[in-house]
Image 1: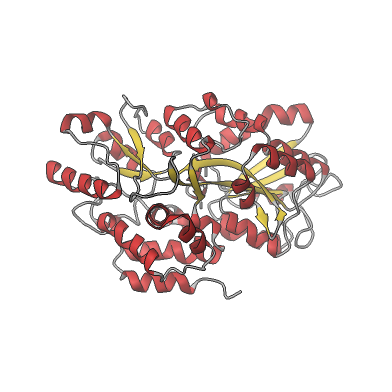
Image 2: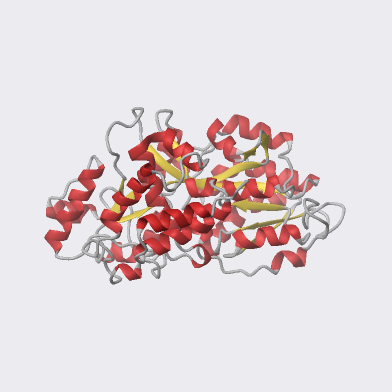
Length: 444
């Protein structure tokens, strides 16, 4: 969300309901556009945007385009919802689509495009995408050869958050491979006499997505890019031994009551713990290790911690299994793709701005997020961990893959996969979970 959304905050904690855009409103059938058409609907030069980015992040989002709105005489009206994944289709079908939607999952954007709801990206947006984004990122907004959406923000996933001072005091070393991470986990458990890891899957309607991130990290690192890409396309099903192996490896941590859930209770608290809550446990020292994306530095800061190599909390990338292709980092990541249900002049202008380096630098400069836009100045990032994440994204030697669940059809990616992760940590056998997830894959 899968989002930012600080990165993936997008799927988690939205506060607004779904009525706001209706006030700015529009009418019309599928694909007919939203509330900001210059010829009617919400009024001249009003552009409505619907997404999952909420609370403080939503305020920063609106601040990021405020000057541009004034300069261009366009009123952008943003609404967030924790029910975005379900409501966007309902609204499109009912003729009440927003002008623009910020999709946390490319797979959901693809669903909307193939059903005829989305407009093809205008040429000015296509030009921005070609100039400022890699072919991989352009591909996340492309459906059957047609560009429908432009990337927005991004996150680098797979960071392991820890306290540098605690590691130094105990003589713990940063692991260089996956087995080393398992060995470190066992060592910490032995040294402190309790579980090292804190884990939270809770995210309202999206509960379970943090678990998919663990699986995706291991599939990519253990089996490589070819298997990962085939898995996204269901050429390698969830029941394949490569995917089961990833579950088995992750289970060595997440299913071991000796290792989880520091500060919250037993394994039964994984699903009920909101994904943002472990930040406070990290800062207080109740928790030693936590797996979460680059956007999590904002949660740690909000919890009173400083994020730096010599600060309260720092992070290292989940190590690989050895033998990965390339000389750079091997990482998964996420982000949002912006698509439009309307092609009015004002909507096109907003789309063009959101796909530009000017917007990326504006938003990143406000703190808490990053972007993969090649026109972004890394020095605008608000923390060292975000600068490190940008460096990874901009490094040509990095092996990067978008969050698999976000690329899969929504029936799986934000459906049976999320549910499967909830069932799995609550005790359902792995083979049963994999069969149930795979059963959600659309037949056509």
